[in-house]
Length: 124
Image (cartoon, rainbow, N blue to C red):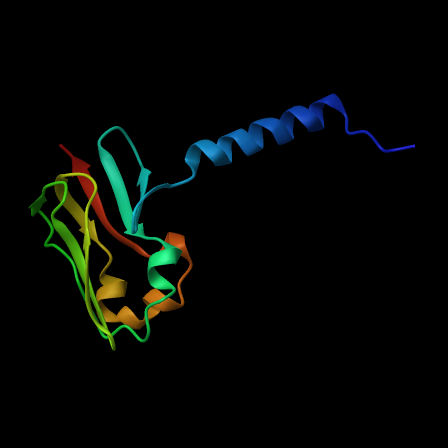
């Protein structure tokens, strides 16, 4: 006979999976987006974007307090094959930037997706 999970365990697994699906980042082209609160957004680079990059030599990010509009260049990633501008899907004011990536841009290729966050935005 097959072993059956208790009703409590089934309910726990159902809500755990639903929680993770609700908290999963949304993908917009080359950028993933995760909401922290009503107007705070975290934007980062997807694994599909960073995988084809060779050794990353430079990374540019907007300044804290700078306003970016949807469609503006969020970052420019430079590697051996050239510069790759990446646009933002949403507009807002930059609250925080990932200084670790700015100081060591080579980590983009080795980091997990959640560690490749670029900026925190206060959405318009």
